[in-house]
Image (cartoon, rainbow, N blue to C red; front, side, top):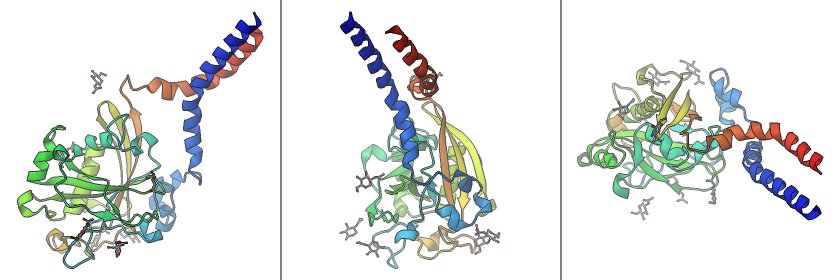
Length: 315
Ligand SMILES: *[C@@H]1O[C@H](CO)[C@@H](O)[C@H](O)[C@H]1NC(C)=O
Ligand SMILES: *[C@@H]1O[C@H](CO)[C@@H](O)[C@H](O)[C@H]1NC(C)=O
Ligand SMILES: *[C@@H]1O[C@H](CO)[C@@H](O)[C@H](O)[C@H]1NC(C)=O
Ligand SMILES: *[C@@H]1O[C@H](CO)[C@@H](O)[C@H](O)[C@H]1NC(C)=O
Ligand SMILES: *[C@@H]1O[C@H](CO)[C@@H](O)[C@H](O)[C@H]1NC(C)=O
Ligand SMILES: *[C@@H]1O[C@H](CO)[C@@H](O)[C@H](O)[C@H]1NC(C)=O
Ligand SMILES: *[C@@H]1O[C@H](CO)[C@@H](O)[C@H](O)[C@H]1NC(C)=O
């Protein structure tokens, strides 16, 4: 009798413990980020100074620690030109979005909201660029290049490779897990994949437009512009809050690759604004285990004391 009671107790305890890790892990991962998240600073960014904004936990300015907001391109003329890292996926986004995966609503699924996919049949046809994100990793090769798929997730990126269009290279900041994206609209393969006129600003804004379902007009942007909207892919819905942040890049053509062909109407090659995206998953496919990750946490905290009480009154 005693042994069967204790085995029941053991069984119940095991069940309870097996339920716990998901909830405690998600609580732990929150407290991992050392400073309390200064979300207000990001949201109220237009009212705060750039130096405060750059200390936000969502990303750090590479230049604060020996890095650059321009990529490192081999063999430019003159030497040392780069492409702007003009979009940042803030690490204040939901953790799932910061995972490089097409599964579970990860970064690659999020990019498919905007029709950007991994390259044509796994072939890398562009040249490799490097970046130094000021995270003590030095000059690091891009994680990969994503191209617009013309509405065809299977073979569409091949079309982009030949026709040109929206594409990006990205890197992950080791210290924060933020994603830094160099986005542009490029010409076709015959033109050597040069960048179209105003192609850095336009590429950034096409991406943000597609991710938020809004229509962003590049010429109307200011250093306080913000946007918000949702997009869905594979039944994952993403709420994207966008802030156009000045001060990370210069509003100039200095050191910008292809700057001569990119400048338009006497304006510099880039407007100096970086679109900082903070992304939350607000909808999931029914089968994605949403119950266990979302509903379970409050349920557990409600029922745990009840369960424990009933277990102990049993004996
Ligand atoms: C840059 O070019 C040099 C010489 O051609 C080559 O050795 C190096 O691997 C290239 N680096 C990248 C990142 O492509
Ligand atoms: C990293 O890139 C910068 C900028 O192009 C260059 O000056 C530096 O020499 C590179 N560092 C190494 C270790 O290759
Ligand atoms: C940071 O770099 C280390 C070693 O280079 C690597 O093991 C780790 O996965 C990186 N972390 C992130 C978040 O990129
Ligand atoms: C997404 O971007 C492409 C070009 O990059 C554009 O043709 C398409 O209309 C955009 N879709 C939406 C929904 O904004
Ligand atoms: C934003 O632009 C205005 C002029 O339009 C300028 O006065 C202000 O200093 C800029 N702010 C920042 C943070 O660059
Ligand atoms: C998305 O959800 C709908 C119904 O809610 C379902 O019919 C469809 O198969 C789902 N699609 C995917 C890709 O899971
Ligand atoms: C960038 O500078 C140009 C003048 O060179 C100015 O017309 C434009 O408004 C500036 N853009 C931003 C976003 O500050």
